[in-house]
Image 1 (spheres, rainbow, N blue to C red):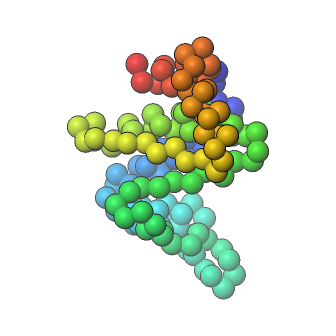
Image 2: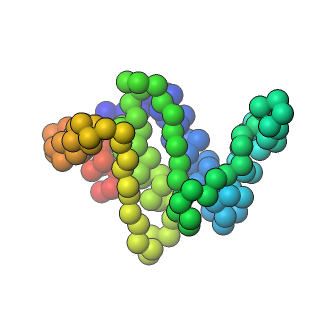
Length: 129
């Protein structure tokens, strides 16, 4: 199973942002510079640009990807794991927290990623071989 073109674009944008994180060594600086370069300086008066980085979870990078219903968020996330984990020092420990808004989605995701026959699990396996 391969990414659709808009899903691939999400991963490309994520990888571009992760490059900014590596360059700037600061989540806030990387986020702010990435969006300034992408869409311009933030102006709260006319709503242009992107509002500055909010450090909601100190010392933890967080990324939000907005995708419409049935847009393949889980498959994007599976592919994003490789990009995210590859961007950081392989000698440092890493953890992934998978957040979902409803418990039924959690169970669905666990079932999907636990099933070695499911295409999402197969993709995950292929990314980390």
